[in-house]
Structure formats: structure tokens, C-alpha cells
Image 1 (cartoon, rainbow, N blue to C red):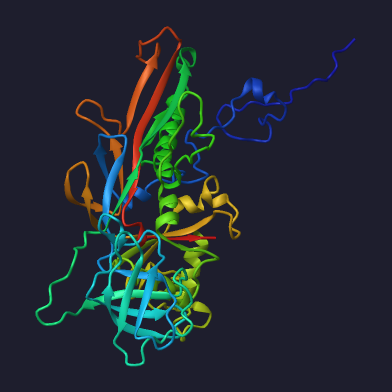
Image 2 (image 1 turned 180 degrees about the vertical axis):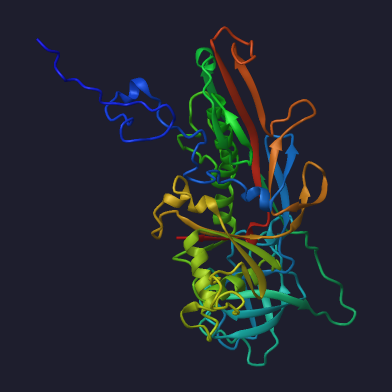
Length: 479
């Protein structure tokens, strides 16, 4: 009986590492015999994932030692009332008006309108149909809202069918005064019209935990981090990302925070309600300028914004922080002003060459004021505001106009006027406790020895609030 030929020699190993048709393995258990090829370096498929930097670009941080931050902002220097009513008839030489505006400049202990005898006033009907000028002969007294004007025009009162004292048909502003020779001076003085604002700091916390057993299993991976560092990490990689996430929340909380309204669930939480804080978006929507109904895409649209800025602080330089679509809209608007480039091929400085890559974007423009624009990653990130619906009324924000520079305010803590950036963060701190950015380790692993729990816990804490000063100079662009 002979030995069968099968199985034969399927492989013929070579003496050297040379790939041939006779030494190629075609049938083996991959998982048991060989390790797969691995890349040591982590692939950054989302690029830089952090979204913070906005406040670092436009603001500053400074300490505070109180549960409440208060400051005073200057009011208007001149006096104007836009909701006045009168029952005067056409051609009356004298008319009595009533101020029906709320929250307007007042003087005296009875909070009467800041209109005094001898003041000369400009009076216009709000529909533009009539104009008069006159001198105040009777000022509001004892807390009432009425004042009497003698007109300079021979034809008397031009506002036919004035209506009633309770109407809101007329605008009145003071432009000077006039007195007879030898007459006594102005009665009463006007106090500075200051607005007092305040904000509350909120406490932010986060933590990262790893048990002691996992700390003994070292697995290295090469990483490049968002803060520019690179190298090898093992279990602390997750801790590092927790820190990056917390850094982002320190900024986004200052942008998105809202105060807890009376009767809300947050204010009524057991064990003591939360008070919340006034974030940038909340403040600008409440006290700033709001552009809604789509992005301004033409010069006429932007002129409306500029005319509003004229009526506020008229800050010379402003920065536009925009989502991607709004940035494109501005590029297209500016490119349309060049009549020599078909299809936008001469964007930028209008000197693009056919051999070069076209520059189809703008970094800024000047129209009355200087506007610099930049993409705001927070508004583009799909895990943050970039993933929200942009339909009207959805609460979506397309951009924010921030005035550059600083403003002078009265600091209640310092007790004097101080220059502050329009946007800045106040963090809680004292001589013994700094809560700007606290981090500490607890547990029984990783060098900690604070408890018998077999883990290492890294803790993060910050207590801060954002101060949006001169909110009337900001513009928020809502969907």
C-alpha cells in the first residue's frame, strides 16, 4: 500500500524575504496568527472641534467678589418724547400736551417729565403732517405729565384734529430756551440720566472619572489636540477632551445664558432655585438692536442698520461674527457693486488674474463705519447652533455685530468711572479663592488620596458672568 500524494507541499518558503508565487499564504486565521496594520496617529476627521475663542477675541476677563455685578451706563444727553397727546384745535396759539412715554427722562422727586418753563421745543405730528415750534409756559408740576406751549408761528397750532391728551400722536424735543430781559433764570435742575444694569454669575461644573484598574492598562495613541499640543496619551485622553468641552461651555454659557423667570421650574427647584444669568444673546435681544426676517443682502438693507447705529453710539469700528450663509450673502452684496466682473470673477480688489485662484470673498468694507467680518464657528458647528432650523421665529441666530473698543462706565465696586470692553467676563475671586478656572483631583488613584473609592476623579469649576455694556450698539441678526 502506497502513501497518497495528497496533501502535497503547497508552500515553498524562500531563504530571503522575497515575495514569490510559491511562498504566499492564502489560507490562515487572521485574528489568531497575525496583528492587523494599525495607525498610531489618531485621524482628525472633524478638524478642530472646539468652538470657543469669541470672547477671547473681543473681550477681557477680570475678577469680581460679589454675587451681583452692577454698573451704570450713561443715558441720552438731550430730551425727547415721542408719545405725546393734545386736545388743542387748529390755529390755537397755546396748547397743552401730555407726555405718555414710559421709562423716559424725568426730574424732581415726583418723577415729572424733564420739561421746564422757558424751554423751547420742536413739535411734530408723528405722521409728518405738521410741525410747530414753541416755548414752554407751564411745566409739569406735582408729578403730573402735562405742559403748556405758546407757539412761535402766527398761525398757531398746525396739528389739525390733535385728538386727546391720552393720545400718542406727537413727538416733542427740547432744542434750547428763551427768557425776557431781567427775568429769573431756569427753575429746577436736571440730574444725569443713568441706567443701572446688573448680572449674576453662574457656577459651571464638570468632572471626569477613571477607575484604578483601567489606569494600570496602558494603551498609547498619538494625538494632536485643539490647543496645539501633540504627543502620546493613554487613559487621560478622555480627561483632556472633558477639559476642552468644559472650556467651550465657559464661553457658550456666557453667550446663551438666560435669567430664571419668576414662576419658572428652574426658579422653583427644591433646595433653592436657580437665578440664571443674562447672556449676550439675551441682552442684545432685550436692550440692543434686532434685525429679523432674513439677512441683509443689499446695500439698502445695510443702510438701515447703519442708520440705526447713527442713532446709538456711532462706534467707528465694528466686527460682524457670522454664520457661513450670512458671510456669503455679504460677499455677494459687495461683489455686485463691481459692474466690470461678469459672474463675480473680479471679487476682492478687482484685480484677479486669469492664472491665479479667484478670491471670491471680502474681509470687510466701509460704508459710514468700518465693518470687519469673520466666520463664527459656533454658528456653523452642527452640534451647536449650526444644526438648528433657520426659519423665521425659530430662535436661530445668523450673526452678531459687536462694536470694537471700550466704553466708560461707573463701576460700583471700584466706586469710580472705568474703561471696560463692550464685552467682558467677570469671574468670582478673592484674596484666598480664585474661581476663574478651578481643577482638582479626588479619589485614591492617580496620586490622589482623598477617599477609599478606587478611582481618580478630575473636577472642574468656574463661577462667572458676562457683562454686555452699551448693548444699544450691538446688532443681532435673527432668522
